[in-house]
Length: 437
Ligand code: URA
View 1 (cartoon, rainbow, N blue to C red):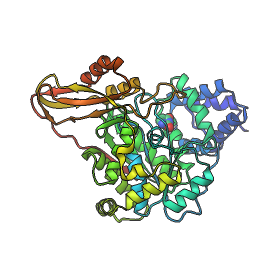
View 2 (cartoon, rainbow, N blue to C red):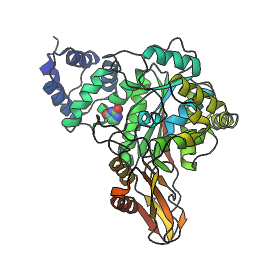
View 3 (spheres, rainbow, N blue to C red):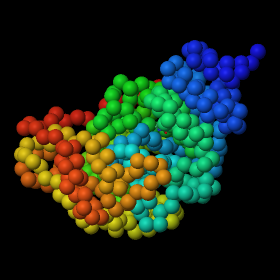
């Protein structure tokens, strides 16, 4: 005999396994209003304590995915591959990665998010380009991916609507941290893009969603297993996020920096992160036999200008001023510059990514509530990075602000994010590990 909805909640509360059809029934009932918010909240808490095995997590992912529509990219030739990052400070990789990978022949349909809390969002950064629209229809999205190779938009209301409601409940019931719930949330939205493959950048450290490596590894492992069982080619890379990625934190300034990468410039850690993830995408997309070959294909697409050309076409197709691609300095940054100086000589031993991210939010570059607007022009530039030798009084960071009224407090916060030592810190590799099945 079929179990009732309340019996399904009781079964998970008691640590029993639910069948695929039972999980589908719970999500469908929730979408249709037969399962109330407070009952879903009870289910989420039961999952928080009892967990979900891989089969249950696949069922939850697919039920959430099918609560909305899956984009039809059947008309786009090739193996479509996207990247998802669990979020970090200064993480502007998507902006250079999508056109770069597309320039190498792998279509990249990318649905991105907005910044919230200390981490920024790709959509906010892209919208610093005058005229750039991220609210394209799914029809235009599919057309642009087909014609240009990539398009970057925001989540539409048709993409996994159950996830949106469930996430709002998790936020107020202290159940965000459950790994199977995170996995189903991330994958349901990504699978809705109509992709064949997915590269996950699971960030670890001070500025990451997962602060410790054990939990990040658990998340990466489950993302790979569940995504693969859901029929996709999935690779996860664990990367370090103790200090900000690159030298900029903000919106216009981060987009500038990402564009520099397409011109063969940009800071070493940002270039490396882009190449590592891009190489995995090219291998999944069948355009390189291994990551060594893939890295030279990526470098060639930068050197030939092919990646810049794809970016120009994408920006134009999305209504933006494509001239900023050739000349990133056209992107407006705030005119008032406040300098932060080293209090001592020595080596920069660390820059606390969380503190820098939160300072960016305080300056107006980010938001603490989903309905807030961000200021595209304000931001932080790091003139020194971990490992750099500095003299006393040397400028280590600059803040680009609209007015100097809160400058002292901001300087204090950014100064406090830097730590120094007499000896250079041991260099830490960006990539901690790579996981695939
Ligand atoms: N990002 C998501 O999209 N969902 C989560 O649950 C956590 C991070």
